[in-house]
Length: 96
Image 1 (cartoon, rainbow, N blue to C red):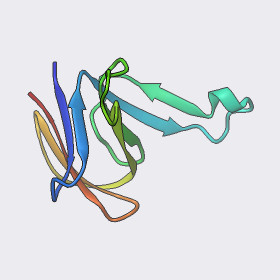
Image 2 (tube, rainbow, N blue to C red):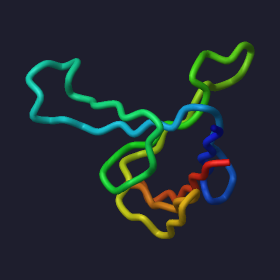
Image 3 (tube, one colour):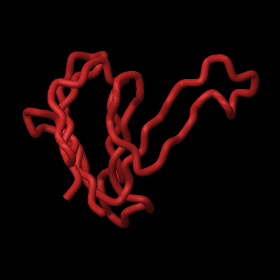
């Protein structure tokens, strides 16, 4: 399955086999438990999204793209989510 994540103006983003939600777990006692990783995730309010390659790409400028925390879902269908982040950026995520 291929996931795609691009800023609405198409200036940045990535695509690949990884779509990961990162969730801050501030109540965790250990530093290594402060972030929860959810694989094959779909964007939703409160998470940070990371999309890209599941392995390091040879001779590429990046392996994945990560957003700020999602604050609002603007549009959603079965294979598409348009959302806004804490920085005010708008992204489009899809499965193809």
